[in-house]
Image 1 (tube, rainbow, N blue to C red):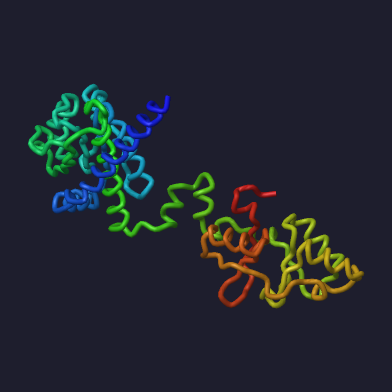
Image 2 (image 1 turned 90 degrees about the horizontal axis):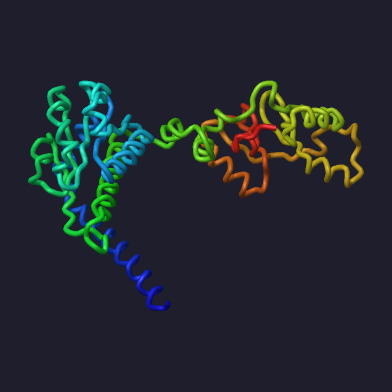
Length: 321
């Protein structure tokens, strides 16, 4: 049993070591052809179409997904389906990335002449620079993998890992050259926690009639009604359009613990100089502030202190009361 455990761990470590070395060795392959490929993709007015069979096809799907989510429209075209009609999905202003470890995959080679007849440029990713695919492509990227990490040296492991990493390198280079920013990423990921956290505060905040507002002279009694009706757990205190304080459930509790009068003005119980955030900030920063100061609501103001809105933790998490 101990020998088996040792063998399992050693096998896993060896695979990871070999694949890690393969990715590092790719650095030496990044040069003029890689730059040409990225520049071609930058000038592509249509989509980036990835095609490959088997394991290469699966890698194509992931690269296409990464490109699409980072500002470069892309999709996967199965070469076997392509030869039976799906070539009609291609447009003349597209660019094709064809992936084949051997560079001799029949299904891929069968569609290359048709793709070229459309005037569509082809980028090849292969492990054999002398292969048919490499010769037919306009630009060829070479992996240079000598051996698969598979214990038998047969199953695609190192080559698929290296291809995936190369695809990430292409996507990253395109992001930098296009000036792709966090807000752009958020636009392509509107769903889920990630998209919400990368949204701007102005896109999530409550404004207008949804914002609880009172003046410093409003009675505590009326302020309680405002807090209850707007269901944020606080009301903002505003004078001449500027934020001068905030009255929270906690402020009220502390006020009444000191025998506060319900008819007293809000200024007697409010917190002055509350924590705020500007509407152009990311929701991520709002969360950081809330966590740091252990609060659940932030007034939204401009640089002059004028009130713009209010944002609650639940708004950022996508759960309005």
